[in-house]
Image 1 (cartoon, helix red, strand yellow):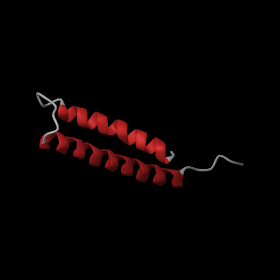
Image 2: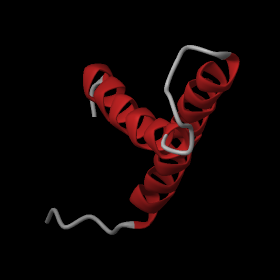
Image 3: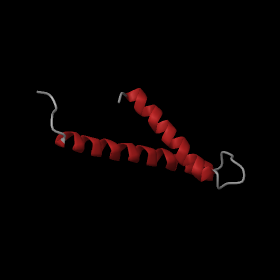
Length: 68
């Protein structure tokens, strides 16, 4: 996946993670709790992508080549 594609995926993940947290609040304003929820979502989206990369790199090493 190219860098632009990764940014899009992380952006989508951040939106999903932040929306779940922000849905708990009555009003969404840029208060410390909102900023914190968005920051946490960015952090977790990046961590999830790192784990996906780590697992995909590991699995690629063990996939036998189908080329003759």
